[in-house]
Length: 313
Image 1 (cartoon, rainbow, N blue to C red):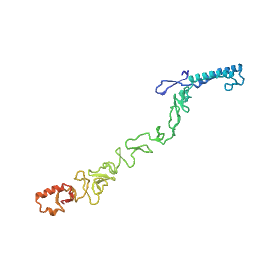
Image 2 (cartoon, rainbow, N blue to C red):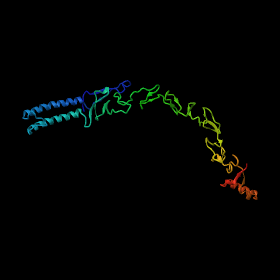
Image 3 (tube, rainbow, N blue to C red):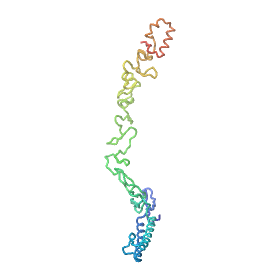
Image 4 (cartoon, rainbow, N blue to C red):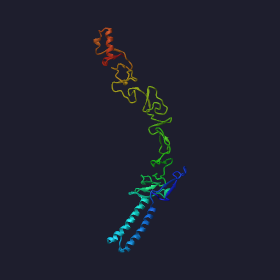
């Protein structure tokens, strides 16, 4: 399509890159109307000429009275329709599109073929419906936030349109909602630039830099020995009735809560491992020779019959 003189001259970034963009219109309302006007000026004399050849003075292309008059009127109408189609092909838009003037101040001479309801902005057809809290700015052809006042030191976030702190915190730190300082969220405490839970940190137990001993853990902000029945091997690990705490347990892989009456590695007290007698079979063993006792001792103390083995006190 050749539409003369309708060319926009603008720069996308005039302050940084002073180059020009030349964009040609896809259509022209002005030239289309001028073209149609010229076609109409030719149609009117044609209709007047038909009346001079016998058409009644009130005859129109839609009410032409007789066949001779209708034939003459149809020729005038056909000529106008051909002229209209020529105007449309040169200056109009395809079916389903409308010639739309650009809303950007740098592109005011540009017209684009857009879907009805769309606007042309910087030579692009787009919808100007913006989400809540935003407005269509034809200077940027987008939907920036509606400006709002934020309490100092907060600023408006262009992504969410809400008020946010200008500084971003790292790690577990979060912004204080009033001062925007980076602080640890409850119940964490800032210990040497790290957010820690002083109720369970072995190196910051109860307060920063309070270190628990190797055989202790931080239980509810207090360094606590793990050889207690109420904290056996771990905080709040309570030994059930009849069991005792032997921590660390000499039996590899076993829990520290043990039965001192039957445990092979903690027989009578924590850490005792000497097998002495086999009750209730003691009476049967009293007459055994030393080699026989050694054999039975080795078999029973190392087998599943641990309940028969009593540890020496």
